[in-house]
Image (cartoon, rainbow over all chains, first blue to last red; front, side):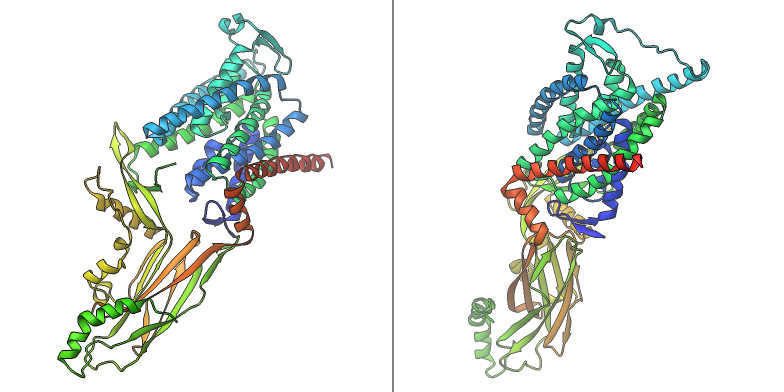
Length: 307
Length: 269
């Protein structure tokens, strides 16, 4: 069934959009990532104008993250306190990020920088996670399925002031590291036009030392607010949020997120991490190839003045 | 039917035809007063939610006041449909530092979002180069890149790229030999409008030519408009963007909550 999208001004297959939403929703619920870093390139691929794809994707992430967070809230796997601290940092970071983005845009070549950002961050995070989870799986096999909760004691994290107890995460650490993480993720999220879950999740696991099960729900909570803010910004300044596209994507997305959350709960933390790592590396590889190989069409048509 | 061709034809007549007529008294080298009588299968295209392209049938007849001279070149018909024009920026990628990045760009001051030319014969036989120059009929002539040659040494390759990309998307169509002419009087063709059509007024021009020269032209419009839900959403997003944005968020939150609640009930049973 073809449907004409009022803002994107293209006609696409409705079932294709439902399916895409569903797949990305499953991943979102499983890993606590918004899925924007997967969906946005997919939307480009089926012919949605980039500006509309980025803005509408933010709107869809709100829906799937909200759906996922509710499922996590019932399982008590959301650290509300940590989420709030991260969000404060995140909003500050997003504001800084938008300023930085506009500065880069005035210099030109912002598209290239966004792509390079993707390749570098996805590459680093993907490889680190992959190696770490591979080691963890090996170790758990050696020690007979009962791995010692080995957590490197980061003295600098524990030496900082303003210590607070995060009960759900079982942590007693300073609020400074979560705020710094929030700010950094916020900056990157604004530049790269995504919720930032794929950076946030590893940062929470490896820097803050939060348990993986809590990380997913907490990350989703923060993503809701960041992407809701982004949606409103795009809708009011660029008029690029396509409601018809968003509705189709989010119907698939919310259902997918519910299924994904249930799959995620049943899986081991190491398996979950290694899958996320593989996915991140795949997207990284695809983007790197785009930059390295000669494109079949060297020319692109854009709106005058660029977006 | 009001003909836009009259002022031009008048000029043509006084400049070229009248002297000729004076020379060969009685013999009319060009059929005087050939006019287009046009019909369109639709002059409004409504973009609804399930819009999947549309086919427009264009048909008409040549109205003559006097019979055609026996030695006159056969009549040919050119039909050009032109969508709304907007400025576009074309960027070219180049390999630098081992990666492909956008380097040169060219701003094209006016490129139609849609352009279709249908002719009754091979284009260059139907319309001469000078007449094409004057009426901007062929696709390259319809794209104007005025004052855009500052930084780029080869602006033509950029306009060529626009034509190539849009032809691939079905937005630019070059339909040679697709207009059928019957008895030198009746003509018909159909143009397929693609599903990725933009809103606006589509200028439709019909030219009658003989031996490559335009003898008459006629212009009409096809209105392409979003209707119903499409219209509502589009207007809302432009006129009340904040409400539109909040509405999008409300739908997202409601859908997220709805799916969650639904799955909870589903799991309990």
